[in-house]
Amino acid sequence: MAEPQTRLLRRFLLKFLLMSALLAILISACLVNNFVLTRFLGICPFIGVSRQLESSAGMGGAVIFVLTLSALATWLIQRCILAPLHIEYLQTVFFILVIAALVQLLEMLLRKFSPALQKMLGVYLPLITTNCVVLGVALLNARDYSGSLLAALANALGAGLGFTLALFVMAGIRERLDSAPVPAAFRGVPITFIAAALMSIAFLGFSGLKL
Amino acid sequence: MMAGFWALTGLGVTLGVILGLAALFLLVKASPLAGQLLEILPGYNCGACGSAGCAGYAELLAGGKAALNLCAPGGADTGQKIAALLGKEAAAVKEKNVVWIFCGGGVKAVDAYVYSGMHTCRAAMLVQGGYKKCRFGCLGFGDCSKVCQFGAIVMGEDGLPVIDRDKCLDCGACIRACPKGLLRRVVKKELKLVLCSNHDRGPSARAVCAAPCTACGLCVKNCPYQAIALRDNLAVIDPAKCTNCGVCAGKCPTKAIA
Image (cartoon, rainbow over all chains, first blue to last red; front, top):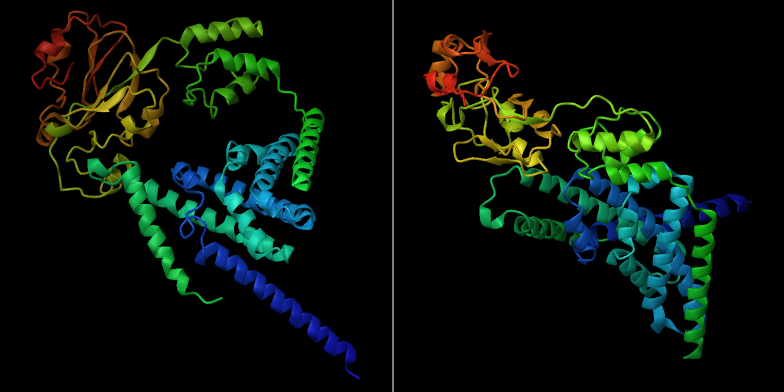
């Protein structure tokens, strides 16, 4: 009688459940397990490129972009090459290879077809090749989300957003620190580390979030 | 074991071939002229030419969209090289300038209140135009020295920037950074300069600072070359007539000429 309606409802419910599960993964990767401030991955660009808001925005955009794409590539590698051949122990080598090639190819494509975007992401794109957030997300995806591509992508996107958030907040703090009367012994990198530590503690507050 | 070996080799070769093909098909031909121009330019990326950096200026030059003499740090030399490369006539060479600070106050200027905000001139300026009683004078937080990428400006003990004439390459970054507009271009050769920008009348200027130009006119009367004139309560020295003889500096009762 109401056969099509029930089916529609079930479909909607399934979709809703899937969406909320993906959202939970995204928020968890972005805030609760923030890759920079909780897992301490990608500290190098976090300290290196957080001097100005503008450059941190460029770096953040590039990281989100590359993270999501590399998550797709590494998930496929894991699924189609590593798992069937039982050579998971070569994961790290494979992922580094694929990520490096991907970033290189991406830069070529951007330079050819979208110079504006290439100018915006600028020097940050090649820098990302060696960013351990990218490798970290790929490895964690292979461990936790090898069953679902969507979940892996949500995790990568969340990680990218979390990285950008941390970078952006840090850049804001550092721009103000530049003009603050900091004691001579703390000036420069030391006060930056202290600020980063305080931020990390602040992000600890999210760890109570049950998703 | 062998599966891993072959898989890794296969992937490496595949990616290598893909990248190689991509390098062939996605090649973007950069204008060789812009590259040559970029080599001529000094590479400071200071922004004196109005472009974002040397590369931007080189591209504009290659496209014929910019004047040839905009590179201030490079000076006449660079201008001529650019002109030679582009086969054009070198534009009139601008006289070599340096930036100078037109304030002698610093610690000698009286404070109006205690300022404890952000340590930048720009921020201090927002609070009633600064914490000095002199509304024209230097605030001493060194916004100019922070933007100078050539290390030509350091903040001195007396609360004023000290400018190294030899290091200054006239990029103008400090001129844009000073909220009081105290930094101006002057010709590079040694000349006497009036170190004050206070346009108030003598007694009011004297009330806020120990080293103001009070527009008393002694320097004007004593200058052997008639190079000094009073304008808007300030002595102004004409660089074309000044010979750096130093009579005015000796006569100035407040030592505002140096």
